[in-house]
Image (cartoon, rainbow, N blue to C red):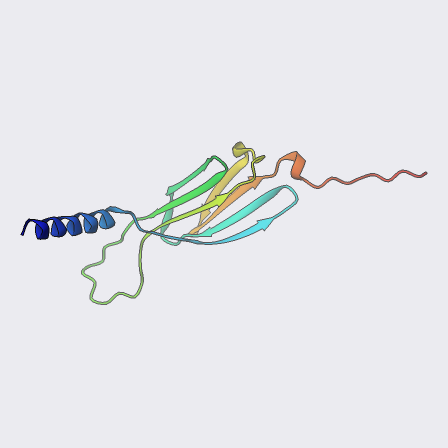
Amino acid sequence: MASEDKIVKREQSEVTRREERAQYYQPAVDIGETENEMILKYDMPGVDKDDVDITAEKNTLTVVGNVKHESYGEAVYQETRIGNYRRQFTLPEDIDTDSIKAEMKDGVLTVRIGKPEAAKPKKIAITSG
């Protein structure tokens, strides 16, 4: 009987640990590049700019967006899923993290990452022989 109690307790603790982990959705991201910067556009509907956390640490850009759950009564039927967002990208080592800027508009987060001078294209002048 004692071994059965241990099994039940272990199963219950495993279930509890699984429930404590935060569940995140991975937002769709479009990435573009210009001569001077990289541009990342995150689709995060339902997220306010005050509920977004952007960090750049050890060459990793992490974006977390928290959705405020709107209550409109008891759900009778629901097809949509609401949850928080999280996405990470590896940055080149020579990125200046101070050049990272972000803007939120209509559920789309735009992150602009300036390129270092060494990564920008340079025009080479041709001299006559």
